[in-house]
Length: 427
Ligand code: EPZ
View: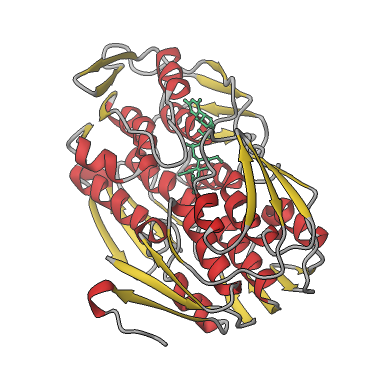
């Protein structure tokens, strides 16, 4: 198993661009199933969730090739409509294959996706949407069978009780080639929804209102091949912005979409950082000591993203004063707190609330990545801590961050990836 070793205390400086968005490239790769031809997707990051998605596309019969950050999918050879348990379990978000497969084949058979480290991850909204399209949904020996083979999927009005990102994506995927018009009320407004709609509209789909709470999809009979460039990853950008804030220094993030970072920039300024936005670049410089952030409430976009909660919590552990977090999206997204305490952080959590009392400095520790974003918070704490930090179970981090140790080393961090059997003492 690999580990990441960090010797903390180095400032981050320089300029860097940000990888393509994991939560955009995954549904877009699924959407290539609807094209029934060749799709060329640029700016795909080298992360294990993309590898897992490509594995499922190939299992379904698609020809998939990769040329650096470009993935080419020929879905004309698709010949299956099922995803086995082994592949479903490799990636929590594989549920988004439901809409892509049933949208193309009229029937989808998926093994029930398990929960994960941050919550039970129910899929009731996904399945009730499929039934509203006229599909028959049954479960058999741990498999979900969604079938609309008799009459095909019929467009309908769907009101989501929660603006679920994945459910919104599955409804868009299932309705793109359905008969008639679908209207989604209380749709998710995340930028990744807009990117998915942009890709599909580039193929000839008719999707209106993505990014708003009401989305209208007029079903079309077929889609054409297209090329698409995935948007930059706002969560990865936020993670490295916070890394700069915690270590001091000045970093410019190039070719990002500043409007996607609005919910992050505000609390960073509250912590005393100077953040400048110029066209597609965001520059942050940190004024230590950082100030506490009164309250971070995670909310659906455009509120503060739950995917940055752990990272912002790491920042507040060394801020001057007490900061309060409310995690409104997932029921158990505080697993990283136990590991932050090992650095000497002072945090008390009760249900969805966590109270952080800032300390002068963290001390390096041996910790593990508890989940994808909790793992990235370990990187941030290690960068800022005095002394050496060893992070294990970094496969969680590799699901969403492309070579994070290389990006951070390029900016000035003393950080390296090590295979456990190659471990050498760094003292
Ligand atoms: C997407 O997950 C993201 N994943 C998550 O990012 C992100 O945290 C989440 O949206 C919220 O923004 C991808 O895009 C691949 P949801 P998703 O459906 O679609 C409840 C990361 O770190 N819910 O919006 O699974 C659910 O339990 C990952 O990159 C139901 O109750 O999120 C949760 O409490 C982690 N029933 C809330 O809604 C359902 O049928 C939000 O879930 C579906 C969801």
